[in-house]
Image 1: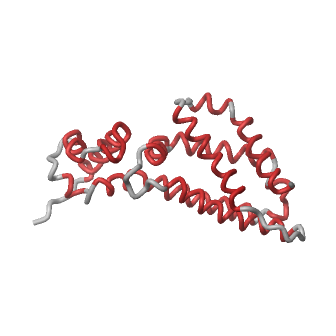
Image 2: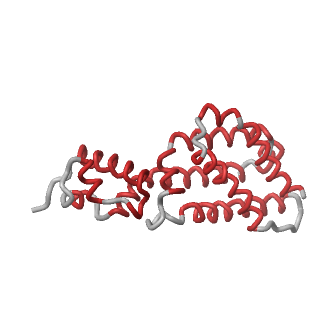
Image 3: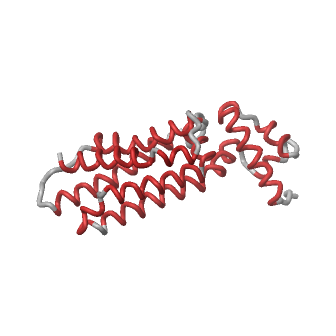
Length: 206
């Protein structure tokens, strides 16, 4: 007879697992410790989650879903605004993008930290590269559409786009490594926007 899964117990397991992964990393995390800290027996945890990887995926999946959806919506919005490229690639637009990114970073801080620093050995350990590769593909389509609109036969380098997109994760990693508070991060938002704005416009207009 299968055991009934209780939502309250599931929440305790996820909370315990999040703390365990943040402290030990995926590879060194213990299902036994997770169960004990959740107040259940080690055997009972498998009634709720198939294995350690399933637990890790459940914790980070909401953030991954959101960030990929945001990425596709953002690119679709840019493509729909090609008739007003001056505004699309303006400093003001870039600053709004930076503000949205900062909100996302701090609202999903633990999930991002898990993915970037504690996911080795899990099915999510290549998240960073997978995201950048996906974003690079979408950005190349956008850049080529811009070139076509300008009557240019130019095609942009995937490597150059990849390097610019990597700046996002460099910023996120610095925020986490140096434990930069949200209020402090906002003090640098215009500088970061300037870096990103310069990189994209430099690539497009070079």
